[in-house]
Length: 323
Ligand SMILES: [Zn+2]
Ligand SMILES: [Zn+2]
Image 1 (cartoon, rainbow, N blue to C red):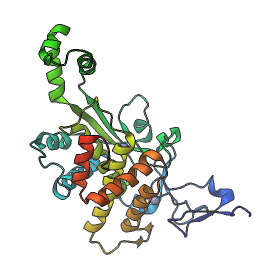
Image 2 (cartoon, rainbow, N blue to C red):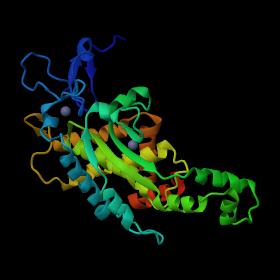
Image 3 (cartoon, helix red, strand yellow):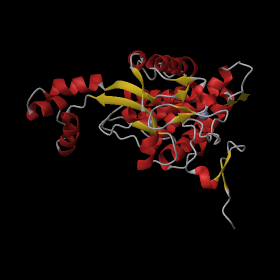
Image 4 (cartoon, rainbow, N blue to C red):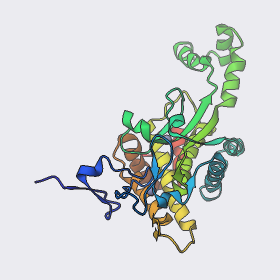
């Protein structure tokens, strides 16, 4: 069998490019469509002036370029969390008022490729393409930067208590360990995680940026949850899978909210509705273990439970999907 002379994308069946050219042909960094080849052709892509990234005219219509727009999208996502998903309702006697306020105060920054891929920055990266390997780091589209007050005593104390008489009171143990450990441990328990900032890649169309921010908001929600315990490890597949599910469902929600007539195709190419379908398709068809399998497991659990809130509360408490 001869290899196909054309490169082909299943979502955009009209998009074909000669295989000979498929490597060198520019693609839109958001919808993946190929730039028309002919010099001066209608529909040449815009250079986003960020590491060679380009945007097609369809994605450029709603492009997000500054942090004010990003902040607006962040607040819309939080509104969805609050009103549609009920994620800030108190649960089991635990208040979420502080959580909601903390999320509303998070600075949202729309940044270029290099800021998102700075190896010295610690956070929960969001590889938006294909594999969860080194190469996907170059496709990060969002980042939730957080830190938590974890007094070293926290870990030591657990180890210490495991090895000592279980009847010893915590304060007796702390006293035996010396210092003002008790105050530090109490402060650590009270302060928990702090979200420093949420970053989103510049130059994405509005609804893609919105879904990236909904994904990052889910990370922030886990970190700020009253049950969140930084000493307990939540598997990446579980956390990223839930974030992908919320992003996916948010795209569906935006679709329901869209009452415009335009929809599937516009002069520049795919319309908002078609693009949202594509962004959902990308989430559904990722093949890697963390984002792809994580999404499918989260979606299966959601289908069983029927409530995003119940699913996320379970995950926050158990660091695992319900079985
Ligand atoms: Zn595009
Ligand atoms: Zn993520």
